[in-house]
Amino acid sequence: MAMSGGVLAVLVVVGAVAFGATRRQKVGTYLGIPYDWRAPTWSVLKERIWNPDDPRVLTPKVFGWGWSINFAALLGRLRRR
Image 1 (cartoon, one colour):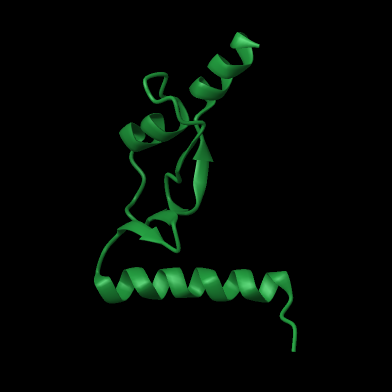
Image 2: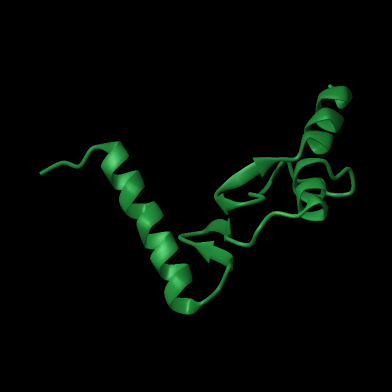
């Protein structure tokens, strides 16, 4: 029996939330994907969305599971082209 991609994605997200809840960790990784369940702050938002000191284009999400885009690093890469 084949599962649709949407069902599989929901199961993985539910697993990530349950994993974090059982370990009582609000920040970490699950299946290699970062998560952060803390309330967002301006400093974290700036650090993840606009941080010219961080060369990574993809940074851990400000809130939730996955990645955000560091627009400062992206702009720097586009300018070097």
